[in-house]
Image (cartoon, rainbow, N blue to C red; front, side, top):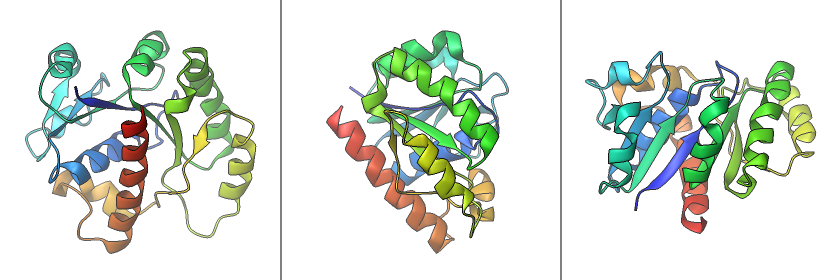
Length: 196
């Protein structure tokens, strides 16, 4: 059975697609991986011909669940409230990327509420994404998140050009800092996946 890794947040612009893509690419040498793009905009699905990792549309979800993939990454659109509970039940890991901003903190509450309501908070991992260098705001937001019953990753993903470019060049191998960050996060995500 494939391990399902869901990336979700009720707010757009937090880097869900890029993060899903880079985690999948990071595993492609050692495992059979694919991505399912549930976003109607289909950002990832549109670059499927450039990708070294297979990218499928939502229609393939059922079929892929019973295939021989080791890891299936599901990239979700914002405001997916009606299907999110079902997807959380399906997932082995729920990644909630967030920027370190006040509006992002307010928006993350609704995502966490859905995850907690579905009883899947033990699978969830908040990841600070697109982090600006030398900002104290990240620590302030991290303190606010301690109110929730969801793990916050110690691994943060910086706001690097390498990540923005990664979808076109299949990863961040050319950038040592970006690769180290994605390696550390991949290990953490795999640990959660194995334990669920």
